[in-house]
Amino acid sequence: MTLSKVYFTNLRTTPSSNLLKKMERLVKQAGIETIDFQNQFVAVKIHFGEPGNLAYIRPNYAAGLVTLLQKLGAKPFLTDSNTLYSGGRSNAVDHLHSAMVNGFNPIAVPCNVIIADGLKGTDYREVPIDGEYCKAPKIGAAVVDADIVISMSHFKGHEQTGFGGALKNLGMGCASVGGKLELHAASKPVVDRDNCTGCRICVKSCAHDSIHLDESRIAVIDYDKCVGCGQCVALCQYSAAVLGEGDTSERLNYKIAEYTKAVLQDKPHFHVSFIMNVSPECDCWNHNDASIIPDLGIAASFDPVALDQACADLVTKAPVLHTSVLGEKHAHEHLEGEDKFHLIHPETNWQAGLEHAEKIGIGSRKYELIMT
Image (cartoon, rainbow, N blue to C red):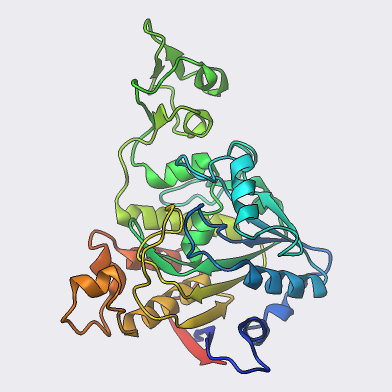
């Protein structure tokens, strides 16, 4: 059996080989130049960082990769989809502002930023995959329309999935707002009556005529008609239409894998992960806690499943920083070789997502780690 190749470089530098040069050398050795980029639209999927969070990938790395892609003839753009929760990235206006403030602007990175699912998170395409959990994932239109997908992922912990790597960056990050609802929720949206103003935007925008106002001018959902598309959650400006019951960690990871399959379907793709500033929780928070391990390096592969597995294994083998939440909770324990992410978030099961991703043909958990 042929093992997937994952290439890795540490963060040691010399005057003639800084980190940007090392990243470029890494992706070239991993084979990125074998993709035909000539005149192709390339979606570079990256997280722009929630305002206040400083753990996201530095724009300098994005600039280095974008410049390389342009030299190879590509038409690259940086992209991400809007968030389901309210914050600095829940609509394209705020999202673009957050990206620009965090350094993802044409001055620092020589390409444009395109929010994949449009102004309000409603610009998406359903991509049929007939998955076990998601039949036709709702993917941001700009990603679907792209010819090639490149992911740049910050590898870190996550309170619902265990960790966030390439699969989460692609599956969750490329999902439209309605798609994120499908991923997160085990049930359909509900209305928080205390927040509803009776503005009727959800009534007017529901394609299934499943919402009306009651005698108190509060929105009510007819669940016999509701299909759980998430349009009301995406459009509500008052946090009245919200998630229903949350899903389990296993099912969330299964669904993320299926959304990733939809993102990558019929497209050349390549993936880079940065194992640095490994914060215990997601970059979607407006803060980042101290790293749980020392910065390790950068990894790259054509196989996002192998890449996530390799990154998880590297973190497992790494020592814990005693100044982190993990170090404080386990001050006198030897944690090298322990699953750091499960220790931080014991209710999560990140292995389930990789197992399902392998099962549905995205990639392999078996890999060869090649040091560069």
